Length: 283
Ligand code: PRT
Ligand code: ZN
Image (tube, rainbow, N blue to C red; front, side, top):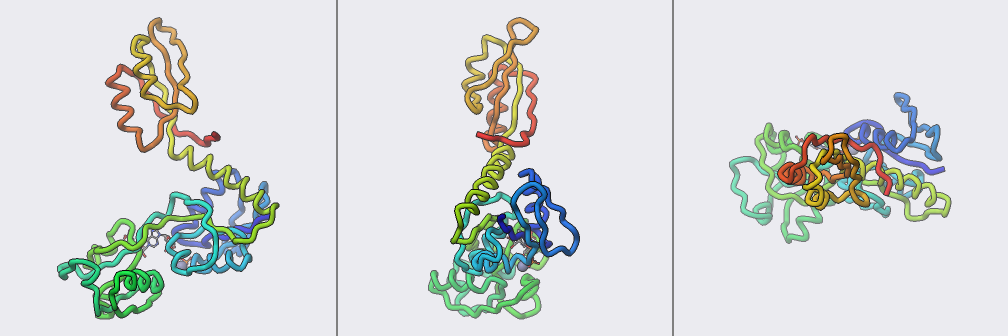
């Protein structure tokens, strides 16, 4: 049995539960439950505040956890990072009052900086030999300059709209973060075996998300050129169509090269291009 800590409620909760679901692990997530057991996988799930997860994993109260990199590095606990999970993306940035002059990090010398990330903020300032006054506050950091509590802030940003509505501008990013899977450093063989099984599934889910299945029709005299544009898992599948002189080509395209490839396929003579999502992908 492996014990997994996930956020009880908040920005990472839904995506964490969705990931487990996509891994075929069924969890009954009763409201206000502290822990629950998976029906079909040797996994026990603990629902905790995200701030507590690194400590619980370090102490082996939980064996693994899903939490933001920002929290893991701020808490500075001794845990292993196993896998980036691709959701909960944000960045930890300094922001100052819009209209205020800012040249570089030296502009923060002697300033009062409000943050919920005192450790990472202090570390970054120290690395850049800037002396500033750090005020730790636990929430609503972005209002601190407006109420005269600080000159600048260091806080998480995703869309940037919170900064905008509070009259602030982002000036320096100190960390890019996403949800990660962490584990306790002492693992038995059996625990590692379960983690490997879980990772196998996570990889299949992640891979599927980054890829699309593509079907298209190609005139036979253009097949070579079209096939050369397609990577496929081994090579594309080519099937003859009822219409003589035409073939159907099936392959897999990764998300990042997708639009570029579609355009080139069309230019090469491909027609009736269909693109469908892939649920799981096992290599
Ligand atoms: O109750 P608990 O302690 O578990 O939750 P929490 O309130 O501490 O954390 P929560 O649920 O807000 O966030 C959990 C994790 O989500 C964070 O640790 C990050 O890893 C990740 N994450 C991703 C974010 C954001 N994006 C984010 N935008 N966490 C917070 N924000 C906040 C930010 O602090 C600011 O107030 O959203 C605001 C900025 O958003 P934009 O879109 O306006 O820029
Ligand atoms: Zn928290």
